Image (cartoon, rainbow, N blue to C red; front, side, top):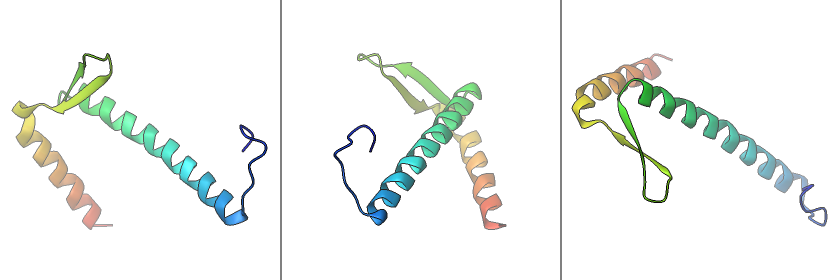
Length: 80
């Protein structure tokens, strides 16, 4: 709201906006961390596009390793 001091909102709207922004920031950090890890493990390929933005793609030669990893993650979630 400091970016636009004329903005008004209800407490509910402010809470929703604030919490959503915080979730997006935390989620973005987690996704970046996960992608960095997957690239480092060689499971995901990182490639610059024509527009210089980075694109990510599963390394198809590692598909069984990826499936095994996902299976372990899903089994771990079932136990909680």
